[in-house]
Length: 312
Image: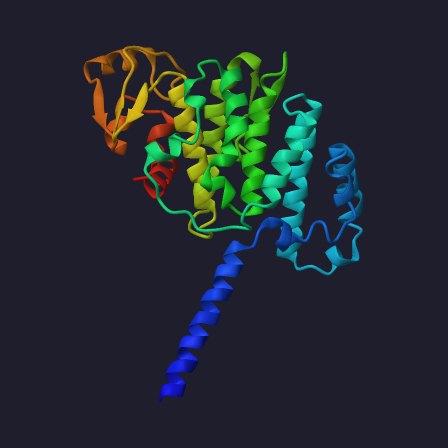
């Protein structure tokens, strides 16, 4: 009997050790990106050369060809992220040293992990972007800080790639005369083209499009919940930056005496003005966005889902 108990305890300890190791594994060790290529040696000296090396060697690698479909998809997502960073250097959104620093952090993030619900106030303490009133200042700040969120760090590579793409597209609107084409997935809907002056409108519209699309897939794969949570965070930070909600403090938030925004984002000027008589509201979902117009993203099923699942 004693031998059985000892064996059981030993098995549990081994299993726990294995689970802990698996959860602690980072992206670099799981993808082996520096083992299937010889590119690591030029990473710190020339990021562009490093990216070119990855693009040349990854898909011709014999090791890559033998990988499972899921592993190949992971490496493709990682390579896509690397190329996004490279493009951001070309567009002068990132310096070369900064890109290298970001890349090193990314490959050392957990391969993926579980995310616990947090107080929204705690999440928002990880960013200073709610103080940026102009879209260019806001999105440059958000592009610097969005990787600090746990929901980014513990997402799988495909969702990291999606988050990087969302932010990169929004960044591109800060280029003089630039245009980004945001098209809904529904083939029957016409796409809308946004110019540099429409940054916040694009941001809200694009986030809503993605949130709506990803919400349909949540039941089939729980990983979709993470990117929906990320999108909710991005929208709330943007709403704060635009002055539609003034601030969060100790489980409450304060509304501004007046604000203006497109109806797709949060509060219209009339609705913001009508909220002046209600200075403080509880942090509950119902009260927080009670003055948002009926067609606001805050009233969509996916936004409510992401808010409830991600925060408390």
